[in-house]
Length: 183
Image (cartoon, rainbow, N blue to C red):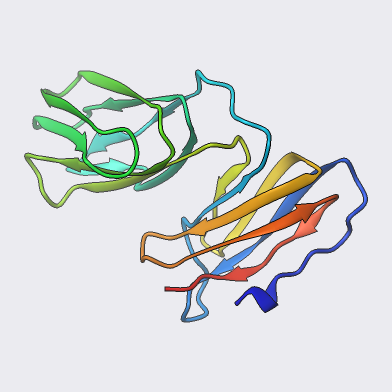
C-alpha cells in the first residue's frame, strides 16, 4: 500500500535511491523491476544480452532503457526463433542455429515478452523504460539506483507475477522507498 511509502534524508542534489519491494503475500519480490521516470531521458546506444542456453532465456527478467540494442546469442544445441508481439518494439528474428547471434534495438517503452516459436516453454521479460534510473531487485527484494537528480518522478514497480504499483513522488536526496506490490 502507498501508506508504507517511506521517504527520508532529503538533502542532496543527486540521490542514491534504495528500498525493498515485497509481493502481495509479504515475500520479497525477486527480479522486480524498479524505475524512476522524470525529465532525464536515457542516452541511446546501450547494449544488453539475453542468452539462449538449455532451452532457457538468460536472464529471465531484465530492464533496459529505450534505444538499447539487445543481443540474442544462441548458445544452445538446437535452433531457436526469438520474437515478441507485446507492448514494446515488436520483432521476429527468425530461426538461427547454435553459435550465431541476432540483435534488436528496443525503441519503445513497455514490456517485451520474449518467446521462441520453436520451444513454447521458453519465456523471458525485458522491460523497456524511458529512463536511465532503473534496477532489478535481488533475492531479498532490495534495489539501489545511484545518481538520481532531484526532481519529480513517476515510480514504477513491476513483477512477472502480475503485481505492480506506480505513483508520483518528489526526490530531493537519499530516499529509502519500500513498497508492497499489488495485483
